[in-house]
Image (cartoon, rainbow over all chains, first blue to last red):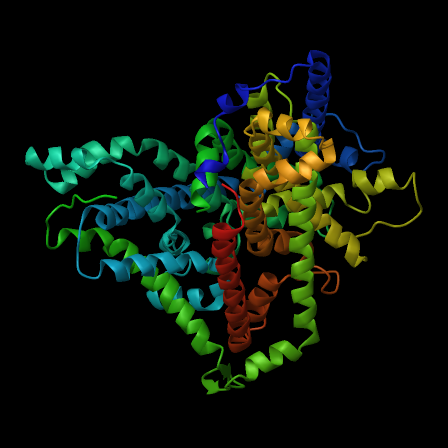
Length: 292
Length: 293
């Protein structure tokens, strides 16, 4: 799929000759893109606005679409009531654990598959390959039972390790290693370097872009995953943020403190959105390459 | 193709061991266990399993609630995928011009991907809120109809569809835009010289050339809407009102974890597995034959 996006330079050839028509299309393009950006941003802006208002402002009509003064009190309230510190810590542990764990596991297995011949290699390869077909939601009850046999219910092990088990990372690295010239490894062997030395000093530095791409995708996946932490945790201290803030969402019979709920939502969505914005280049790469 | 290999007897096994261990523990074991459990039912006291043959599957396909849930799932996924992609392609086609600042637009379009479906749901829940939400308030000037998703199934469905599309739309648009920009102007000019109008040019040239992008986005959006929207349903509608938004994944979870009907839930997992395998097989066939790269 990496071929779907040609470099932007490809469009430099054959510019239309009618200059006037092109100017007009440029204005249309800007207008459409600005409108799309604005429409997409509105729900987030609105959520932020609500998170700065007082309860009476939130519940009065017409809605006020601009920020107010209750920002600090709402965020402090949400922080305290949902034990946000703990929730965000748990989410960070899960997201980073899944990201680094899976990168490490798949990097090693891809190295073995590309750079070694060993008995059972084909079996291992196909075993990893078929896992592409079984996402977590289709194995709901049984995976839980495996975790309870292992005694991992309500632990960080249970929250992270099962999410590392998928083939996408292995395939990404396998594909990348296959593009490496043989001469690299041959030279390393002539110098008497151990294979692990070759992996560590030569292959890893070259894989940085791939690791970054995988990191963004996995961090967002680990942070935002809902079903798995919901099943595997049973105390408030082990909940991750996306699940933990549910108690702040006002239900019909409760005080409609949507300002506090939105403050919590803003805090939970910031880290993954921030990672995407900061690591945008690798995000696009990762999105394309992990989807086979 | 690579020919160089290191010589080492035990190292490759050590290297694949972690991956093989997690794969066996969290893929093969649960998958076979699902298959096995789907053939049993729990005894009345829940203390042992009783052989049930294909009874769970028979029950599944005769259960009107399950069939409704399957229909809900397909409708939801198709609407999210097709509406999302069609609108993105339409806008991208009109916005396809050589302009400055495309990289900036791309950043401003990609960020919603990072929002968890559950969080997107909470935000849209408030936008749709019958008493305080901005959307029912705006609509109240147009019509007296009560857009209350607590009571009306289709409003609840619209709510989750909107939340799902919102999350996906930005990168659908960004990818289509990049795909369109990569099509060389000379190809379209050639078609133009041959007398093809803008609409014919689009369907005869642009759309086929975009098929890899469409295919990529289709798979991404289908898997997202089918499986990753669990959090959206759970945090917003809980499958309701009634069972208007009870998609398959939500039902499998509910029957297994709240209803404790292990065999019945396992049978649902097996059906879901079959669906994923079908989708994957379709993906490989389609990817090889029809798509222009």
